[in-house]
Length: 178
Image (cartoon, rainbow, N blue to C red; front, side):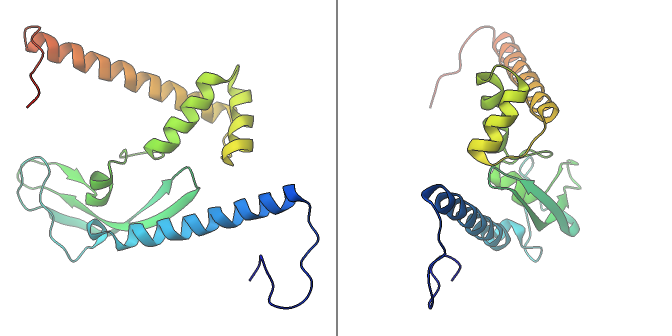
């Protein structure tokens, strides 16, 4: 209805204005679809039972509708989902977050990667901030870009350390693929 009115003249816009308006509308549509998809996921159903991903015992639902605001490449969307605890091994998680492979805190992996890419390919965090705002419509301060880049760098270092530890524990042998 906004784009093509059923009656009357079409609003006068240049091509850039039309593209910007369509981009905004498509982002709104994508956010609505993402919200609907997250709420429909079986891992968001508090009436369901969940098995612990670590020990396979049934988990106890500690909170039926713990709300999480997902900070994505499209924007932010708040989703209620169950939060569970395994009384057997002590592992705790929101099954939806775990099933989707989303970090326990902060933005989604795709958003982290996008911000990190802008930070590493720009000459400064300020330029990365401008690039994100213009190309991805992500509003983030230069300080936010820096914090994201540092957090991702620390994670890469930790991943490398874990691989080295695994190599030493395996006495230098590389495990064979099945």
